[in-house]
Picture (cartoon, helix red, strand yellow):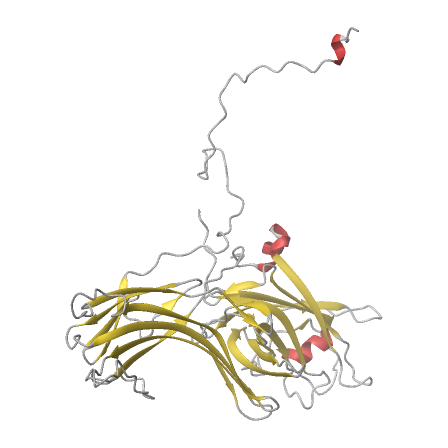
Length: 448
């Protein structure tokens, strides 16, 4: 049986040129459109040291900032250091290290709950494992390395290890949350009295006691756990919002709400509000978040926000939202913006306790850009718009982004309030609007 030549697969010749080499570096005719840091990328470790002295014992921890008051480590951080004992080492029989974390939650209905997120012990030196040909002597310096885990188990489920965090909310409902970490180095000495081989004396203080015979030395060093997280992309830096949203509309996200009149008989209309923020909705703690607000309604309604009036007077001249010469301008913007943080605890019994706090402030000009309109001849009021451009920053004291770990949830929001001047007498209601966002520790950095 003969197979037709047309049914045979074609014959491929080897390529005339070798396969090109690919590189992350741009060629002369290429442009990088966008870039994001690799998930879990680790920044360069600091090269300084942290030192703690307790009597004759000294602990040196590596990879720290020289000015650090508390040692700080990131995700899966390695706690590396050296224990130095320059004297009184003759009867030391054991040296151990313990790295542990705790999450303490106190609520009004559930009381105090303490969860040990992890506890890992390391044997640094023991006379049992030393040479028995002569009396073993503890070395003068002992190097050690302890590794922080990335997760822990809570109620049978795996959770990410929470960062070092403290929140206190007195009053009702009360809420206290504290996530702490620490390194403990323990030194045990032989008493060598009769048949007693060694004795440990319990010490409540964290101070290191004198290394006399039979004494037990415990050196406790609190550490901070700061896992690094960063946004997937950067923020738009355009100084003029209308141009920015036209050039890159995908970089902005819009949410809407209304400012209603106080009563149906008020001579004002509802104000339609549109808020624009960067669509990434993930911001570093050091970022300045741009916010654009657009208000649309009748001119009479908009004037109530910037120049409240007791009556509607017909104007033969052009109407403007700019402050007249005989009227003092507003000393405070009717628009208030700030960052809110919700701290919530979901207890195992199904009850939830949450509290809110402000962690950042926004700046907006007292008066928006002027809107001027010639006298309207329409039977229905004409719709006008006002635009505000502002920005919001996180307080410098805030060092932790949002997280969720073992029933403890920390979430962040942009909160906008529109408060008319003379709010109690204004025909417009005061309105609050929140937009959920996520705060992370790092600012986006491009690789370009």
